[in-house]
Length: 240
Image (tube, rainbow, N blue to C red):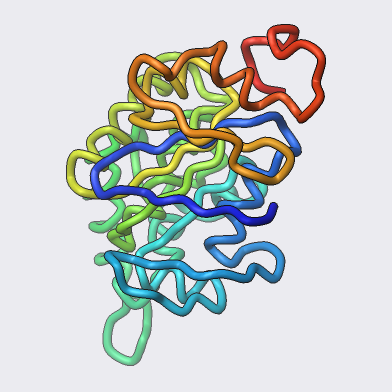
């Protein structure tokens, strides 16, 4: 991607659309310093912040959820509690930096209840959970650091309809509580029904921004089509 500039406003859900390979995920991973040698500036509440790596992003409250839940989103062989605590162990450490098991469990129970996580015990391995509950653990891991901005890459991929609706409600609740939420999605209904604004990425650049009555499948498809593509309407309703 190149020459990309955009804003995420406090309390909104910003959608990021585009064909696979257009640069959607790369933009989010570049901002959060998870991929590549990104050049440019990031401002948080008007203040320019220096982000050298993902640890700096976490400290500033800028976090990213990977589309690869099992590969990058959660630690399948660890407990729910250990997963939730993973991004900032200092929050559940006791004297001498030793992890306090009680604090770890209480943190997971508190955030898990907020997300309606279904699990008999916070000691259960994440691998034992359904796809929807695994995704809630991945979200809980981000919420444990009290983020200001969240980038979510395909946040409802591989979950059932009920879990998808619950995750949408969680994201809207985060926005209503002042968190800036950016959702990368290949699903048209998700982009149109969930997001306040949608940026469309094509060939590594932002080709347009849509909101209100202009936020339609046709307009997204038209902006997503590579330059010179003969018929934007030939694209399917899911951006692939």
